[in-house]
Length: 268
Ligand code: G3P
Ligand code: CA
Picture 1 (cartoon, rainbow, N blue to C red):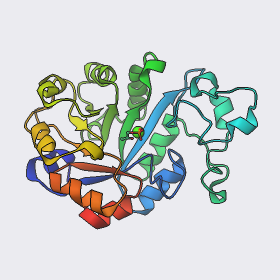
Picture 2 (cartoon, rainbow, N blue to C red):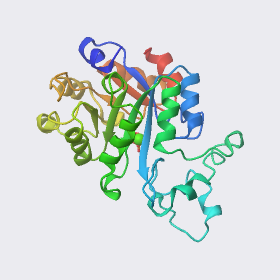
Picture 3 (cartoon, helix red, strand yellow):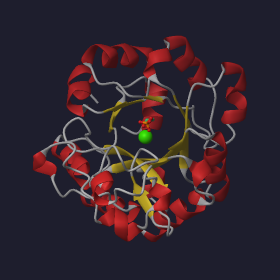
Picture 4 (tube, rainbow, N blue to C red):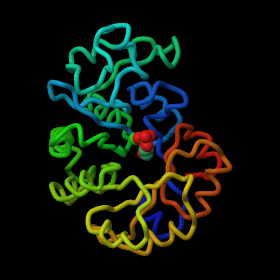
């Protein structure tokens, strides 16, 4: 069931593996995509940033410190910002040992590598453009990679891709560059502002902590740029009670580190 149909019908929310199945494998690695696939989860979320030499890579923090061995590998390069390392330097880092010895040697994937793995599993991609203020032009560049990989062709662009960001400017830019791409805004704009968001975004994706059934209904009342009711994908819901609660609010998607737990709780 597509998210759009879910919004129309009040059906069960889709389940999205946040940074891959990140409770069970190191976040934003190919192993986390594989783990989501092994759990039968077809939507995967990730975070896209850019290296010093202009390669798009999949990593959440603006620093490599938390999720790689960069501090050990490059002790004199604090604060280890993604934007200050080349793609070759990042490709050498261990992005798995911090999570557990079974994942030693996992790498920070390029966006291209990540997309290939999602494609191999026949999954769908909720791509977050992370910290776009640090990376001028990252929207166009992201769309170029997706285009090269065939993800802007039908039926990918129609059914298998959503591009989201906490930056409304970034979401609007993606929409303006490629109106066919479904987009999501991460946040909880006031209801009075929703009409202006509906001009460029298909989804309003809030933290579940501040969510209510009234807000979800208010979002659903507006139609997005593709003429369908705005959808709500909420994050990051990792326990069964919270999953049941937000499903009861009528959300269209639940973004979770524990997709097995959420699916068990709400179906989908
Ligand atoms: O997809 C929603 C969620 O990923 C937003 O927060 O910090 O995990 O990227 P964050
Ligand atoms: Ca994210």
